[in-house]
Length: 206
Image 1 (cartoon, helix red, strand yellow):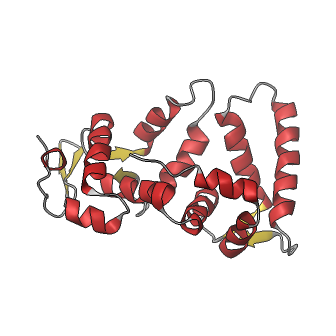
Image 2: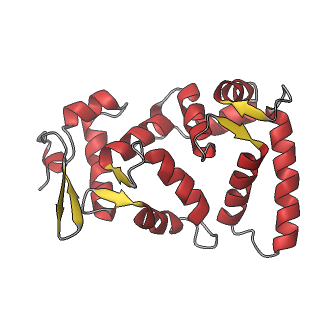
């Protein structure tokens, strides 16, 4: 039985490489409670599910895409899964550890609404510039469109996604700067009750 299942705290994490495979030892439950908004019991439950999908204790992007794809069997999830993986990958190392996953999940499920909106901004900011342009929005709109399985006619799809992008971007670019900052994004989202309600719906009980 592993440390989380038995409630025994484990030592500081490290990576070892054996036969080209990486094995991961997470940090202690007490540390994870400090880093997140989950209690020990919740962390144990989440860890058991994570280890079931990722026995090595870490997940790379390819594996993450495969797991994510199970939730959207009729769509093309690769692009959107890439954005989510990159946001969980806190060190830009190409792998997500249990800590990375737990911290992201904690933000989405237990963080303040401002914290969750900032996480979503980082998800959209795939070029990591700190600003979102119309092109950035279009990439996300296309990824969501493909995710939902709406990729039957490329010409029609391109027209629809361009129109949708224009509408959404105009709503956020109220200063007509050609880009929006994280402060702009959070502020405008907080003024929209439908967005606030959707974000609040992310709160779950493990």
